[in-house]
Image (tube, rainbow, N blue to C red; front, side, top):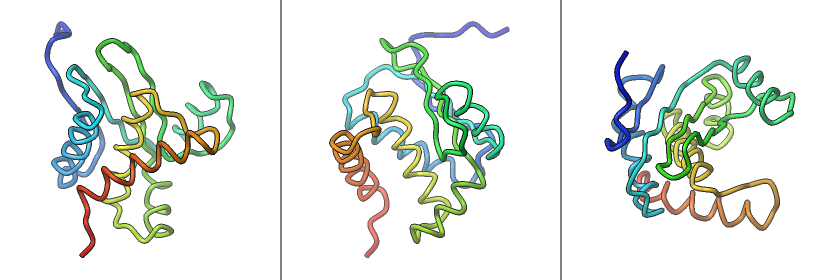
Length: 144
């Protein structure tokens, strides 16, 4: 078993399309820099709608499919896992007129902001979080 090196930063993507990983890492790093995070270890894991609904039910007591769910494991070093739904994100991409890659990038940003302490459970915090999220997203994907 490999020993965890708590001094090395990484962003890891599991079950994501290989051709999207570079862009997703770029989205993650840009978000971390915008939050002035210096130490981080983050795993992004793509899972099915059924699996994410199960996590949402177990940990948030919400029996529904969500697009992204974040778990902060070690706050001092921003160590966490971010789960993103595959099928839900494809549907959302169409609804929001994004490519799937853009939608995944948007949710990578969203997930990291949650790890950084942002919440979107009430209107005031949601506006604050989505404003920051949109600004970072526009740095990555400027449409024309």
